[in-house]
Length: 242
Image 1: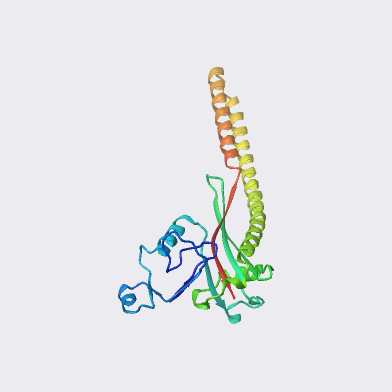
Image 2 (image 1 turned 45 degrees about the horizontal axis):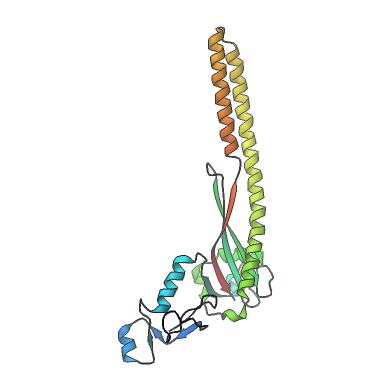
């Protein structure tokens, strides 16, 4: 078998000792079975303590960036009006979370697709979300065919623009809903104030009015704390698609 590693994460060559850095990113003729490696000198045995495996485990433990899957896409798998990309492109899926850390915790997926020329395809990005695993075919797409770093930056920018639009709409809807709640609170306490004002005994009336004022202030303060939504955009997956 063989596997490829990102050029951004240099690892020791299979024939080098620990700590020696090299630019090699493709490793072939490797096995994970000791008996096969002993029987064939042409195979390299990757055991748990091998420097390559140790480095991969460290990267997996510290790097929160999702790995990029690779798959082929057939035109028949897409809905009418959505065309497959002309050459490879990057599909990235982000999760937008909007919360006020109280009663709102809204989450949405934000997909983007950028082809090798940097052109965005929003309809294709959305259509890919609806595909099942059976509709795509795993593939090896050489990374050198794409300027992956540049496409990732562009994908992030597109996702942030989409997220900003969605967040603005969500914030507006949320503010309108809380404005309705504020009106209901104000009407409620206005009615209560009228009722309390009818109390004939002055000291009881004043005590009730103070209690009513404190409750009103507390309810409005709690409403104000719920007003601000906080957005958080996180990359949850990406794939090179052709």
